[in-house]
Length: 152
Image 1: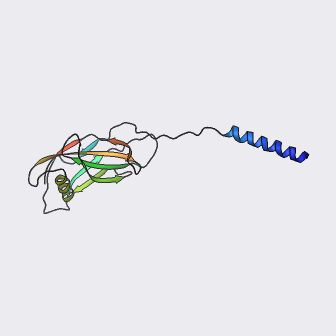
Image 2 (image 1 turned 135 degrees about the vertical axis):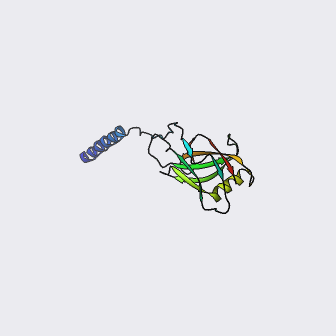
Image 3 (image 1 turned 90 degrees about the horizontal axis):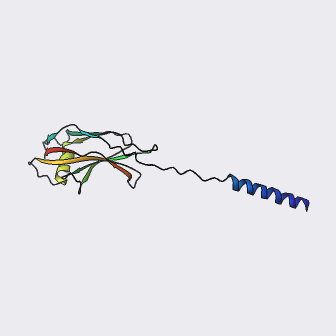
C-alpha cells in the first residue's frame, strides 16, 4: 500500500512538471519588408524579326525580394497593354535566386500578341515583376512598372 502512495506522489510530481514546462510556442511570421523590387530592361524599344525566333530579344533584371525570414521566393515577369495591369499575362516564372530573365524574339512576339499588339504595328507593352512565396502565391510584392515600345 505504501508503494501505491509513492507511485501516486511521483505521478502527481511528473504531471506538475509537465504542466509547468509547457510554454506558449513562438509563432514564426513571415512578412514582406515592403521594399519595392526594382526592375530594369535591356532595351527601350524592340523590333522583333520573325525570321530569327530563337534570338535573344530582351533581358529583364530585378533585385531580390525581401522577407523577414529566409524562404524560397518565386518570381513572375508579367506583361500588359495598360499601366494599370487590369489584364495581364505571365511571360515567365522563376524560382529562388534568379534575378534576371532573357526572352527570345518568339517569346516577346507571343507576349505582344497576347496583350493585343498587332503584328507590324508599334505598340507599348508594360512589364513588371511580381514576387511571392508558397504554391498559393502568398505575400506578393510587385515591382515598379516599366514600358517598352515593341513592334512584333
